[in-house]
Length: 120
Image (cartoon, rainbow, N blue to C red; front, side, top):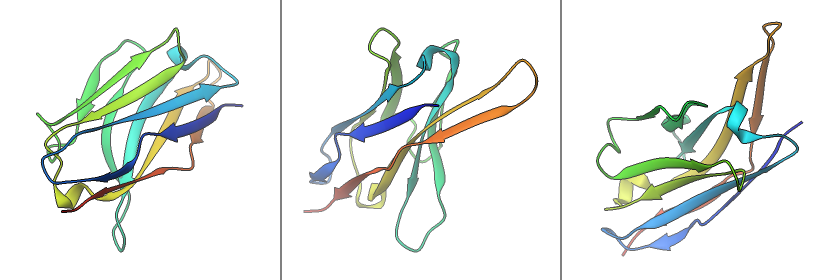
């Protein structure tokens, strides 16, 4: 079992920056593909960024060049650095941990989320 706790959300002006953190307990994050997802009011949840156990990263086109995902395995924490924030980035951001076991079972864990509001 993995417990994920996000932090770092808040209110920021357009053009500002925030860094979200996702701290894990119960297992080693190094074994998991980690992802950040977001859901805005009235919209479906969307993938923001992922980082594999081998540190390969991927970002949604809407955040490329502005957001960076990284991980610190020693701290069992994943980060999302968000720069040049826009109003349309306003959403609840959730952390996800996923891996497939040797027998083919997919383990999938979610945090509770942290609110990011971009507004002047």
